[in-house]
Amino acid sequence: MRLILLAILGIYFGSLRSFIKGQKYIQALGKKGEITSVEDFKNVFREVLEYKAPLSDDEIVKFISGDIVDMASGGKQEEGVMRELVAFIEGYIHEDDLIHLLNTARTYHFMWIQFGGKEEYFRKAEEGYTKVIALAPKLPPALYGMLDLYRASGNAEKVREYGERVLKLWPEDTRVVELLRTIETTSL
Image 1 (cartoon, rainbow, N blue to C red):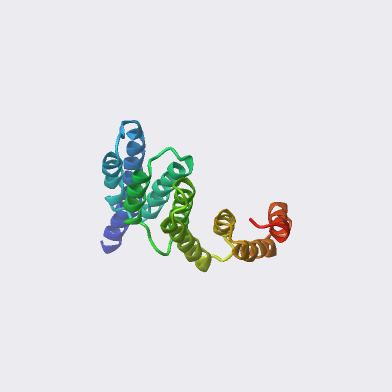
Image 2 (image 1 turned 45 degrees about the vertical axis):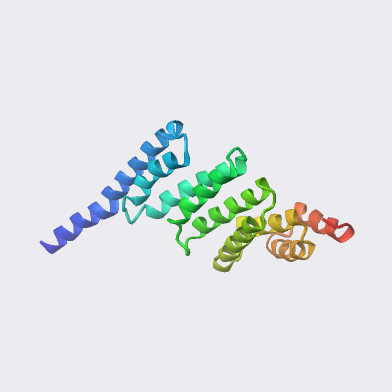
């Protein structure tokens, strides 16, 4: 009898709740056209994020944080909107999840570029990439993200450091070879 109960609970918490959460996410995506404010965004996606489904909670945060990265990279949102969106999703970020951390770092990286090079955004991007690299030292998006962050900021010393790290892993990357050659002959 206990095994049957455990099996039923396993199905409920493992599969059924994840399925329902997935459906809620798809329904939320269907409402994207109706979203006209940050509050609308929060309300639509909060319902999905707060529906507990242990096997899919992290995945939904990855999807939504990825959408926020796309909004930041598109440069079509106002700074205040982006600040609210990133603050919203940060409430659901797990500090040990690489993709959560990477998406947050990338969002701040794009915000730094889009909104006038504000130091706060640079530091948060740098901090996020640093956390990811500490957890996964060979993860290409984090290494290349950090390299680009320093290239765009004009920090030749850090470009050299991260360029060399990248080339140790991928020595055939001609773009990085050329970037390092350029900083040797000129300043960024």
